[in-house]
Image (cartoon, rainbow, N blue to C red):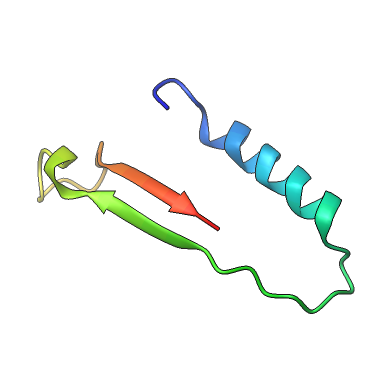
Length: 56
């Protein structure tokens, strides 16, 4: 996933949601995120390079 921009992932996610759900449906989509703690290099720094995965 290195080199993939967050904005590109957001566009793909939006396309999937738009294609499968109308704005009037009241379905819920569960989203879960996990981080790999061993990829964190500095706990004191605000901006991090931690690896995060998200599934829905």
